[in-house]
Image 1 (tube, rainbow, N blue to C red):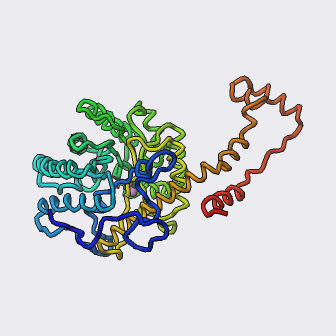
Image 2 (cartoon, protein in one colour):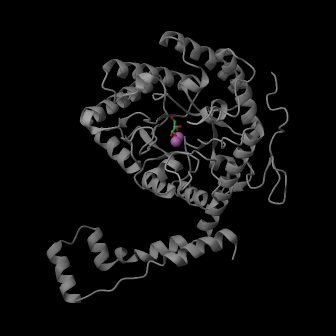
Image 3 (tube, rainbow, N blue to C red):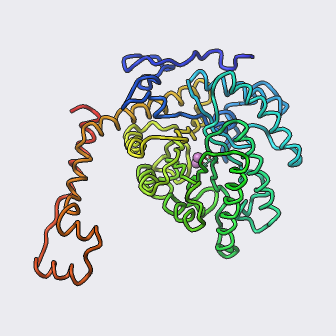
Length: 438
Ligand code: XLS
Ligand code: NI
Ligand code: NI
């Protein structure tokens, strides 16, 4: 097999003192943290679309990093990409990848031929998986790129388009099972609206649930046991997307009785687009029992779209990993780098450096989250803040023993009441002290 990234060595852990740009300084895969190796906590995955396919094109210019891997023919290029992908993942020590059907093989003139291409390329992927031990974290169907999805996929006004989406999901599920993928994602990139003037909101919602239900039933019938994930995003490409945020998606799943099979795939940049923090979305998913997987990236606070930057913000990563630890860790999920290098970072070396930066940031996040838990001051503060609900009046409220007249009697008797400080600045200082060692 040709070596595609000959100039890049296998990336090793050098520790905080090392200065090599192509080494990990904080991610030490086998180091035990809280009784588990770091790699088992983090379960890093490569996004096939950004890493192997996206060439840096934007609305104003063509790509800056060519990724045909030496082949003009699209299928020959797809085979080369598959080989390159596994070399890339092996050099970084990534054990998982995430893919859309259309990332691994380009669409042909008709569905039958497209599916035949997928059969061939998945044989190749399976071979590469067997020789490396790398497997998919999740698969998904790209129901947004082809012009047929301009009015939506499951939410399209056209039943024929709905049929195409269903056919694509069926094949993507079969591929995910064939390749041993642990989960299956639905990101509704075109499931929303541009204007309500032309939209039957209720039918569109029902139809999305119909496709999810069919997908669940078919997947279970072919032996897929893993979770489905909804990946919430409020907008882009649509003006309004139905899976706006975790709370909205969870409400949808409960309405349509899909809560046993679906979890959340929380993406950091989607959280910010929804006006939430990454921590908020993870907290909602966790507390509601829908914690699943993560698409790790960051946005630019000055820009209102999904910039998919590699995650390098350690503070955010620490808060995210605290949620992951408090959720009991990943089971089928993991951290997928749904991230791309900036257009001007146009070499393969930049791509390696970007993954190293992201993996090191989340390794730091994990280390910091473990320190925050060991320190205990944040947990203790929250526990003490709500201690009133553990005895007396609070316990009576929690146990449903009170009603409005009884509570009015308490308030009348007291005459007035004072409450405690929220101590936000102190807690932010505690975080800094724990993270930076004061
Ligand atoms: C786009 C989404 C997409 C999903 C997979 O914003 O993040 O990449 O992760 O379809
Ligand atoms: Ni994503
Ligand atoms: Ni995204």
